View 1 (cartoon, rainbow, N blue to C red):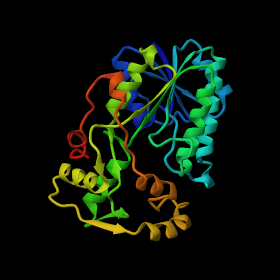
View 2: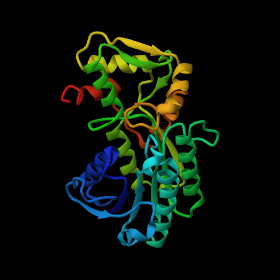
View 3: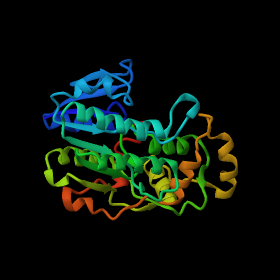
Length: 295
């Protein structure tokens, strides 16, 4: 099968390309710049993901299109916005897929995406999903929880804090729950869906087997790093909500209002995806132990 992927040069994209190559698929990756490192065995094409005319011809002859494009934080001064990279990019991808005459389309969304979402991140992810649902493509949508694995951002960032600092900052009481899922398991679902017609027209929430409070998540990372104790510095949510709006536009500040909101509202699901894909997902502690000690 020939597969066209947008957003394939990022963390999840690298894992997905390896999974698809392992299964014998041919891959074309859309990238905004060819200056980045090429992935073995993948054709690289350059283009603006929000401009379908720049790349739809590259989709001609493909059997499926996968959209992984997304950001976790906005920097409007640099043109990096949820509106552009979630909504406009998805509309362009749908248009390009139509123009190329391809039917099969898979969209990566995010757990917590819903019509009444509070965060702009989830609001724009929902609008992107609505565009996909309104198309006449043979679509599947995946909503993964926090994704971990070699090359990840969030878990590796927390590991860096634990290595370098005597105490790790925590938003609020840290008792909100997350249900992380391994990148290899997310990508396995994507690859399997390409070959499963029964997944068409459906959205799947993807989460791992472990529900962890943020405190437990930090402790698990500490254990993987060989730390007997991880000291936590709890910060009142109210105080952070006062300070963050003034500083979130600067790249040195590690938080945005959206990220605070998404953390405290939790990120868990019921795991119904296993009924369709029928495999056991990797446990968090076992998974992170495979790569954190090496970093």
